[in-house]
Amino acid sequence: MDFTLHQLQCFDAVITEGSLQAAADKLLRAQPSVSSAVKNLEEQLGLPLLDRSGYRVRLTEPGRSFHQRTRALLQELRALKTHATQLAMGEESELHVVIGDLCPLPESLALLRRFFDGCPDTRLHLHFEAISGPWERLFDAKADLILHHIDKSDPRLEFMDLFAVRLIPVVAPGFLRFPISPSITPEQMRDFVQCVIRDTAHRLVPHDYYLLEGARTWTVSDQLMKKELIVQGMGWGHLPHYLIKGELEGGKLLPITGEHFKGGQVDLVAARRRDAPHGPIANRLWQFIGQEAAALVPRSIGSAAAVPRISNRRTSGEPADLA
Image (cartoon, rainbow, N blue to C red; front, top):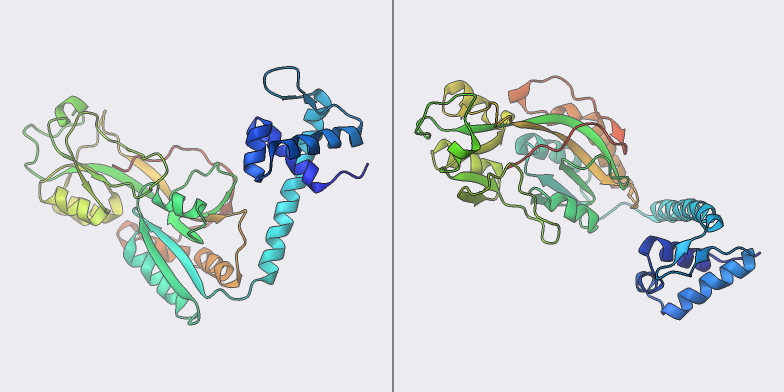
């Protein structure tokens, strides 16, 4: 019963992709080659793994049990290959780090400067991305690490919680033609320009967080520009509390939080791929962020130490809206 790795990969691809042709496309092989590999696997095992009586192939009961073990084996193999790649890697000549639009720039840059001062032979490529942009770079293997919010249920990611970012809907004094109250409705706000952040992702479906349907919008590239437009009375929108604490205390911005505009909260994290190899410099940076996470907390929201947690498990809560 000497079945091969190729046979197992073909069998798994047929199930995960849904058809022989789709499996062949994924594996960059001819469809007859994939079909032959699966049939040979069944013959060697003496088990009918696939039910071919319908329009689409389906797992038999023995096939379902065998596929579960096959997936576990293939996952272990991928992990072993990743580990071997990491062992073979020397110190990286460059690293790509993405700062997301909700990340505090002064604190983030200061932390990265301190780390890379000790790595003179590694070039830092620093990218600024908004909304879905950091995720796209990470999953396209164009980033080693991102500072952003993520879907914590995604098993491909490991992350460290840094701090929670509160998002508050705000306007400038005199911007509205009616008194501010907790009962302001979306219908009332529809006549006013809403400032939103431009999603920098090119392929992912754009995310329109807190976008008021039917309202005029002005799109900007970052939170600082958005803040300035709102302070100047050119629109309204949601902004990070740490960025506008002084303006709120000084009366330059007014919250319109209430029954219909509740604001939100998002967890800022450091994240990287679990299923990708990381060299010694990338691992040192990961550890450094874990040790120095408190330095990323903006002074405007207090100096309480952040407690980083490395994880790849889901936590409760929905992503906050960012428009």
